[in-house]
Image: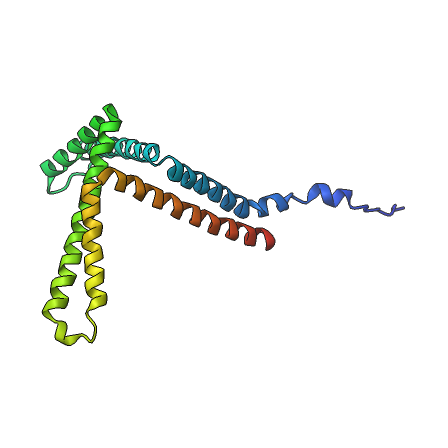
Length: 200
């Protein structure tokens, strides 16, 4: 004689895996990425000097790791190329620069930031001067030349400002990067909410 089996849902509940929490993982991870990006953006916006120092220190550590791995690869890893000595010198210089920055991170930050700002400044001046020269030389082919002249002049002025105030310009660039990080964070929050609404 067979007894009827009564299923009150408890058995199925115990056997079914808890997939609801795992299905929310993409939205949770996206939200966490947004939080981290927002915090990094706020830090760069309100403490640009310290943010620049941290970025330079991290870059120096990456230089050291890259140089060590490169030397290990060409020495023991079989990663030899036709430019053996070039690879050795490049990796050794990478280690040397990284170690020097790590020894004096503040000085390394000042030198690195100044070099990058001067690089951007000279590029801006070159682009602006080329725009002005080209538009003046070929002005008969254009109905209005003042927009290009204005653009070239602004490029040159921007480059000159960077040259005369390099550290302030570096801090301003870090702050702009922080604002961009905050904008991206807001986008990630929107994406996380959409994923959450669709059950992901």
